[in-house]
Structures are given as structure tokens and as C-alpha cells.
Length: 589
Image (cartoon, rainbow, N blue to C red; front, side, top):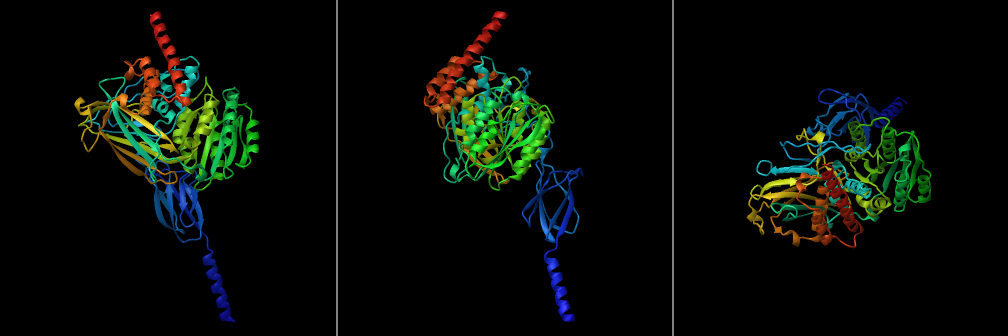
């Protein structure tokens, strides 16, 4: 009997050990001993994610006495530690250099140790735009390295079109030249099998300045097969406040989303969060097969009340996290005129909010509408800090382009944190200037921070153009045998489900071709660039005439491409507006 009792006691003890639960407790702080909240904590044994609380504290149950944890927070070095589950854990995270100035506006492009010019502020009704400072010419022997963030934002083009169609001059700060250039997905070429990107370059003469050359850089992302794309978890975050009660706002968005849901697959999920007076879940998570139910929910939306944007963003992200699809497409689609008037309303406060929310792994797309009180600056901030992109819908045609024709470019990213570094060869290049990718005025004061890359969507063609002043003009009369080329390009990126950075390098050959002999698509890209600089009233394009722009565009555009044909019409409208404006000014004087 005593022996049998001993066996029973041993069994009970063994079972209790096997089923024992430990409680891991601790606190996460920074180097200044300040608590850090919302730190991602990965419990390795269970492969489960937890978060630190408001005081940096955490408590996690586990069956393992010996375990390991990984701690990660945007702007801090990720830290992995081995632990004993019955001991208190004091964890300190080291701040990355890029986080020192995280509350300042982020740089889009950077060349070290340069002074920048500034410009006056424009006021356009109640619309808001960031003050931008154009990139200047840089001495290649002193500052050979320059870098810039890549993304597929195209909002500026349709916004510029809106002004011109109204017969109005465009606020210079509303013109982001790189977004005009990349609106057309010019010179699209599929990468080789197994490659994420295809990189090409072309050196040519400059059509607006005989003493300069143009260096075209073309980055092509691979195109995903929609039939093989993983399930999508889409949360529509729709502004239904009183300011949206106009034909070009909520009704336009309703028509846009109706187009989008036609392409939903049964494996996709849609939810709708609305905000206007109050924040609420308008449509619970619904499968893509129930298109009629989703369509009816969109149709029944109406506008009223104020704009509690902060609470709405938090609610949408919480819903997206609740329905999160591992290895799937998880995205909040914010549709608004950007007029947040309740809660966090400044760009800085919104940047901090969205930076915290994006840690969930949910991407963000911003769709802007409206005029008069349109908040371009706020939507641009949200998109860039939310691992996402930004489009402006000025009509139903643009909605169809963004949500149907370019569906994969808009919502299915192939790479994240994409950043390009250029190292120019001083033997061939005396000075260079990056066209577009201009920084916000408030960010110029600090060019010591690391660059933050952008998101590149499936099938995207991203182009950048440099103006170059050669060291010796004779070097560019033909091919130059120089193993270093004009410049060395280094493309840094990470796959969307991975934090590991990858590097792709490319030498831009010093192979010069006269402008009249280069590919027609590149000629058209130059025409769009000239147009953008002219509308922006840039000091770098003063000698170019509207007729020059029209001639190049007319000789290079694709007549079968509606958007390129429409661009010719915009040139005509811009000529009338800006030539008339100039004449009127002279008359007044």
C-alpha cells in the first residue's frame, strides 16, 4: 500500500510539472530608464505576440521554465534574450540613430552637410500642404553620395489636374514632381525570374539645358499573380462627417468602393469602420463572396457630424488586428478629405499615432477627396508613416484607375522600406541634382538621420531623374570606358513579411545617347518632368517654354494610352492659365 501511494504521488508530481504554468513578469525601458509601451514581445516557445503596457510592464504565461523573448519597437534595436520564467525581467532597448529626431518630419532625400534654401508659404482656401524645398545642385567631388526614399504615391498628379481643370494656378507645394512622373507607370519591364526588381538607367542630353545631361533611373517591381496572392483583410475606414456631404466626396467614395468590391475573391475579407459624430463598426468582417451585402452597406452610408479621426484610426487598426491574416494582405483603407477636427489633429500627433499603430503589421492606404478644406499634408503624413501609399481621387475615372486597373500596385506590396543610394563618379560628374523627392522645409535642418524607405506595389515602375553637369563635356559625346560608370546605385529593401534588409547594386554605365534617339517612353517622362517643374514655377526650368514641353510630349506620347492623351490636354490648359497669369501681372505693373 505505501508503495502504491508512492507511485500515485510521483505520478501527480510529474503531471503537475508537465502542466505547470509559469508567469513571466518584467518591464521594458529605454536607455534613459523611461518605460516603453506597445513594445512587441514574441514568446518563442509558443510563437505568440504580446505587448508591453502603459508603464512598460508585461506579464506572460508559459509552460516552459527556460524560454526566450524578442522585443521590438519602431525606432529601437530589436533585442532577443534567454530567460528563466520564474525571474523578473528588466529589459532595456537601445534607440536607433533614426529615432533621435522621430518627432520631426522625415526626410525623403538627403545629401550630407548641405545648406538648403527656403520659400514662402502659399495659402489655398483652407487646404494644407507641406512647404517643400527643392533639391539643389551638389558638388560630386565633395558629396558623391545621395539617397532617397521610393514609393508609389501618385496623389499629386490628380490633385494638380483638379486645379488645372478648374482653371486655377496650382500651389507650388502641391506639386511633387516625382509623383507626376510616376503617375503613368512609364517604361514598365518585368524583372528576371526570381528577381524582385529590374534596374535600368539611361544617360542622355537635357532638353531644357544644353549644358546638362539627364540620368534616368528606372526601378521595376515584379508583378504578382492575383490568382496566387494570399487572402486580403481589408478594413475600409470611411469619413462620413458633415464635410463629406458633397458630390465629389462621400458619393465619389461610395462609387469607388463599389468598383473595388467587384474584384474581391471569396478568400478576402472586408470590414467597414465609419466616423462622423461617432465612431462605429458599420460592417462586421464579411467574406468577399457576399458582394451584395458589402455593396448595400456602402450604399447606405450618409454624411453628418464632426470628424473624430484619431478614435477612428485606432478602431480600424484594432479591427484589422482582430481579423489579421498571417502571411496575408492586411490593410486599412482610409478615405477622407483629411479634415480631422476632433482628437489628434496636427501632423506631428498623427505621425506618432500611426507609427504606434503600424507595429501591428497592418499597412495603410489613404484615399483623398474634395477641395476647399482638403488636408493633403495630413494624408501624406499618415501614408508615409503607416507603411503605405496615398492617392487623390478627383473623379470616378481616377477611382477606377487606383482601385481597379492598378489594384495590385495600390494594395499588394512586393517590398517595404525601399531606399536608393547613389554614389556619383566625380571623374565624370561635376555636379548633380535630384529632380523631385523634395523635403519638407521643417525637415531640412537635420540631415543626420537615417532615411526611411517606402512601399513598392506589385507591377510598379518607379522612375527618378537626375540633372548632371559633366566634369568634361567631351566625356559624354559617346560611350566612356569607366568601370565605375556615371554612378553606383544601391537599392535597399526588405520583403513585406521580413525585417531583414536586402541590397541590390547596379552600375549606371556612361553610355550616352542623344535625347532624340532615346526610348519614346523616356522622352515622355522628360516632358512630364518639365511640366511638373514649370507648374511648380521652379527656378531650375525658367528657360523652358510651354511650346517645348508640348512638342516633346506630342512626339513621344502613346496615342493608345488615355492618360497620356489626357496629359496633352493638361499642357494646353496650363499654358492658358500661366501665360495669362504672367500677362496680367505685367499689365498690372
